[in-house]
Every structure is written in structure tokens, then in C-alpha cells.
Amino acid sequence: MASTNFDIKTYPGFKAVTLLCLIVLYAPLVVVTIYSFNASQSLTNWEGISLRWYADVFSGPESSKFKEAAKNSFIIAIIAATVSTSIATLAATGMVRGGKFKLRTVSFGLISLPLMVPEIVTAVATLIFFNSIGFDRGIMTILLAHIAFCIPFAYLPISARMQGIEDSYEQAAQDLYATKRQAFTKILLPLMMPGIISGFLLAFIVSLDDFIITNFVKGAGVETLPTAIFGSVKQGIKPNIMAISTMLLGVSVVMVTISYFVSKKDNTK
Amino acid sequence: MLREAHLSDKENIAIDVRDAVKRYGDFTALKKISLSIMDNEFFTLLGPSGCGKTTLLRMIAGFEDVTEGAIFLYGDEIENLPPNKRPVNTVFQNYALFPHMTILDNVAFGLEMRGASKADARTKAGEMLELVQLSQFSARKPSQLSGGQQQRVALARALAPQPKVLLLDEPLSALDLKLRKAMQLELKHLQRETGITFIFVTHDQEEALTMSDRIAVMSAGEMQQLGSPTDIYERPHNMFVADFIGETNLLEVSVDGIADGRATCHLGGGHELTCNAVDGIGVGSKVHMSIRPERLYMSAEPTASEGLHGRVKDNIFVGTDITTIVQLDEGPDFVVRTSNSDRGNKRIFEPGTEMFVNMERGAARLLAD
Image 1 (cartoon, chains in turn cyan, yellow):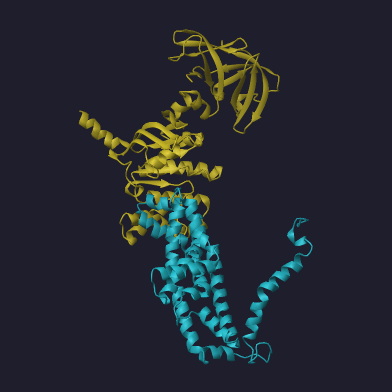
Image 2: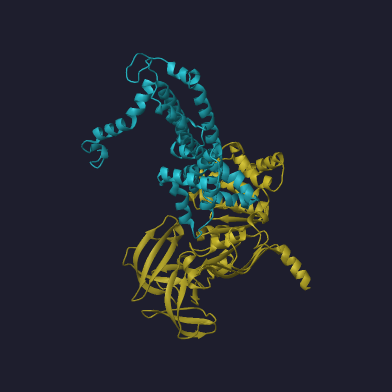
């Protein structure tokens, strides 16, 4: 017999529980996606397929507000992801290649702790910090906050990748007359690239989707896509919100998928 | 006179290790090692794992600091130089070929880092690949090659920048037996052809005997013996070397008398053997004696005055040889090796057969410790 009695699939109720979990996780997303194509003005009555709400996003009464917010979101996400990935790469290099130093465990904890801290706490703390140093709230405060909270997200795939690279490659490079810098740029960096790309995409998505921290630190009149959506929803949910949400969902799914496949790619083999 | 001697030393001694000590915290990995490796020599560091041989190699390469002492490369002190400033290259145990580069780029890497143009480096790398007969694979990635091929690429990559000394860290240990034997000969041949000094690290004594001009046997961070393969095999200095190199009968004996440079030794059970006396081993001392199994032979009748009587306990057939275990009457076991050829007439004896064990002259050696 190929399967054993310990196979989890043979447990009673396995199928039912699995289905329930999948429904709870994905049903809302599926509903929003389907209703974004609804021809009706109503949120609940289905009146046939249409792209009118997508058109509304790009040319409707709120389109200029959404376009401005989307532009802000993408600019912030690109810069925040780039900067945080660079910092995370250096951090990972130090942590993984720095040998055993006294505060290594502590350092690792400090880098990954923000992932566990409730976001609202980070948001309040960041706001208080900016206030106390007299930093005027605006797009810069959003950017700085995003760079900070994206670092641990970028760090995890990069350091995981780096731990899988034996240090004999860099030793071989140095043995073959490469300086430390050349060994890093010509050998270690290319080998780390899948992890770096994966970290970048993760940071990008986290920045693009962030609402709580952004909402706290943004200045008046500066909106990102999530805060613009929230502002719009407060005046009543219209189907165009579902269209924006679906597009945002699409971007996230694409990014996460790329990140998954890139991190799977093992260029050391 | 002195000056001349120094100059010739500079030309003749490739690597001079002087009182090198390596400590990791409280642990001493190398205890004051001094050795001179000659120009154009195939030199092997041999010992069990943890004996410090790889540490010493990595100190020469520059991957480990030298705690105390100095290392000279053709007269220049190098122990404080980083690896990229030392004209020595390493063949790593796991090859460490750069996985994201083609075979050709791997071999060209060292040349480029040394300042050769990309075109020159690639031409030279192509020639190196020809030398190891892998030209047709130059556009492939390392993962597309077999273990033996990767091994040869690693060799080509390390030899391409024409290092003054090539370091090899157990490079054959991942290969199967047949390939390993072929590579042993190829390595030896390559060393002769290039004239580069090779320092080879291995725990495989047979490999060391096959390839080396000289061998340093190491154990527990100390050098036990330095000499040619024949020296080490035929004239081991101590019990560790005798036991580690090849197979041997190690017997506890007591020295009963010494006359005319010959020592009479008591083996227990009334058996006696004479062998060359050794300085420092006097009458009454209890020491070990080493006799190689292939230097013993058996006969039904006593042939020499020293034929030791016993009974066959067991035979082990190993293909090229037959190993027979003979227990002396009330004495120790002897392992006797007979070549599996027609010259050896009847080679497998029934257990219990009465037998005399005889020894070639000079086969027995007393060991100091």
C-alpha cells in the first residue's frame, strides 16, 4: 500500500475543513471580483457583464483623485522597495557572512520583530516620532515610514537565500585574485539575485497595499491608493471601488507569483 | 657562502612553514609545525580528519590566520597577505565552481582578476580546458557536468593563472574508486608537465603513497613523520604512522637482549624474534613491533631459524591477495598476506592447519612509541 494510515488526507472531515477554510479565505475576493464586472449601479443585483466601472475608474468623476493616488502609491512603492531591499541586502550580508558576533541573535530579532508588532502600534509610534522631530507630514513621511517597515519583508527572502550559498564560492573568488569587493559583486550578488528580486517584490507589494501606517503619517491632501479607496468608501460604496480593488488584487497576485517563482529558481544548481 | 645558501633556498623551497601555530580559542589545531616544501614537488599532507592538515592548507592559501609563526613563499613572507595577494591557487573539496558562469568563464576568472583582457583570458582558458580535455564543454554550466568533469574544471581554473603553488584540498574524495584512480595518475602527470609545486591534502594513505614525492603524516595537530612514500611505509617512526599507513601486525613485545645491533624480542607464548635494535629502546623495555603482512610467508616445515609455529584461524579472499590469520601457539595472531598467483602454490588453508610463519629479513621494526 502506497498510502499509510497516518496520511492526513484520511483524517475524518479533512475535506470539509479544507473547503471551509478556502471559502472563508477566498469567497469575499471572488465576490468583489465578480461584482466589479456588474453592469448595475447596485452592489447586490446582478444585471449582466460590463466594464463600465473600470471605465468609471479611469474617466469618471473620481478618476483624477484615483490617478493621483495611484501615482503616489507606485512612486512610493518603487522607491521604498528599492531602498529597503538595498538596506536588507547589506543587513543580510552582515548577518550571514559576518561570522559569529556577540549580538547576532539579538540583531536578527531586531530586524524581524517589526513583522510581529501590531501595525497600529508602529503607526502611532511613527506618527509621534515625526511629530516630535517636527517633520511636516506629506509624501516624504509616507516614504520614510514605508522604507522602514519594508526592510524586514525584504530581509527574509534575501537572508534565506544567502544562507543557502556556501562561502567557498567567495573564497574561491578571492583565491583567484578577486578583491573582497569583486568577490561580492561578481560572485555573491549574482547568486543572491533571486532572493533580492523576491525581497524587492515583497516589499513593493507590502508598500503598495499598506493602509494603517500610511493613513497615520500622510499629510492632508496626500493620498495613496488604499487611503483614497478608504476615503471614497466613507461616502458610500460604489461599484467602481470594486473595480479598483480587483485591479490592485491583480497586481498583488502577479507580484507574489513572480516572487514565488524567482525565489524557487536556484541558480546555484 | 651563507648568502649563496640563502639564494638557493629561495629558489628551491616553494613553501617554508616556520613554527606555525593555529589556535581557535582554547583549542590548538596546529602545534608548532615546521616544514619545507621543495620547488616542483608533489607534497602530501596526510592524516585522519581533525589532524590539522586542512587547517595548514588553508593557512597557506590565506583563508585562516596564522596564530604564531611564519609562512614563506619562495623566500617572501606571506602569512599576512590576503588570499588574492598570494600567487597560490586552490582546488576546493567541493570544487566551488561558480554556478552562474559557464565553464570557460570559470576558468578565465582568475586570469581576468589578474588583469588580463577578457579576450586574452578566454583564449588562455580555452587552452587550459584543452589540457584537461574538456574543450567541448566550455559553453556549459557547471551543473551540466559530471563530478569527474567538474573536478577537472576546478583543476583547470586553479592552474590557469599559473600559480607558484597549487593547493588541493581532498579533491578526489567525491569521486568513485575507478575515476579516483584515473585522476590520481592524471594529477601526477599534470604536476610533472606544469612543473608547479602541488600540495595535496588527503586522509587516504593509498592515494598519498601513489602520488607523492614526499608525505607529511599528521595527527592531532602535530607532524608525525616526513619522508618519501617508501620511508613512511617501510620505516615508520612511531606506532601512529605504522598503524595509519597500510596494514600491519602491531605486536606488544619485550626486549630480552641486544647484541651486535640486533634485538631479541619476546612475543609471548615462548615465541622470539630478532630485529634491528633502535636507539632509545634498551633491554627490558616493553614496546611495539610492526611487521607488514606481505613480508610474512607461511610454510608447512620450518624454513628459517625463526619460523613461528601456529594454526590457521581464518582466510580472507580480497581478490589480488589472500589474507590468512594465523594464531601462534599460546601467542598472538599474525596476519599474513599471500599474492593470489600461481607462484603461491596452495594459498587457502583449512582452519586448524598447522603452519610456520616466517619473516623476510628486516621486516620487523621496533617502534619507539
